[in-house]
Length: 273
Image 1 (cartoon, rainbow, N blue to C red):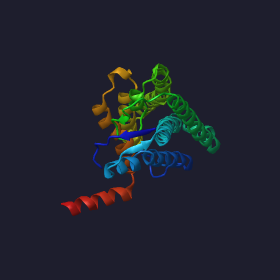
Image 2: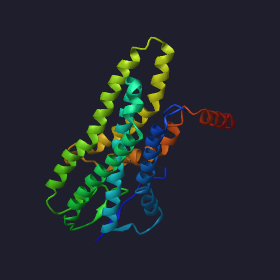
Image 3: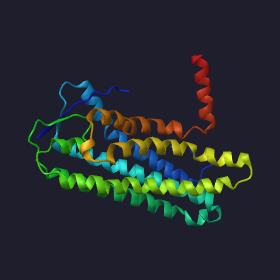
Image 4: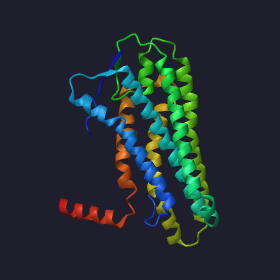
């Protein structure tokens, strides 16, 4: 079976400089996931924009959906792990090096990868059992779960239930962990008497919070709601923010405290002026 994608889109995370090696490992893992995340979507999207034939074999469509869901959930889990890392570093600095050992970091990253791929595999298997009677035209720029469900002529109640319940759990669990961690971080920072000290700690977390707001804000808007409220046009525009824009901005956001980056930006602004 062949599916056709309709692409109407135009081509269109920060830590201090002295971040611990283990924290750098987390950021490197996050960067790797971002690269894989966009690589699962952007090449096919660009090919559809440049090609007259937009046909996609069903197996390739399922493969793209699998990797999109897997890397997206891994990204979410890693953002939660980074929040725990910042909580331990700021609220429990004396126990930080002992608790957050390299082995602990490796275990957390591995668990994030395994759980996300199991989650994605479940969605893919359930999607593969559905029947598609046509016309098989996906009104989206990639094979996402909800657009595929709207094309099926089978009973999709199990898929929709899983997407809303289990999907909400894997998205909202890391998000809740981030919120709770930063509530404790904020309480700890407000106890610091020095205004300069408070600013230094808050500026350390600023870039990370920008990433969290962009990533979770768009994902919750698209996925944590009933399928009856799904809107092709609005969701397609919002989806491009967390699939293309956010991963593209992450290197710049996480470099806001980098002196070389700041100097390069200043030189660029002067040249433009």
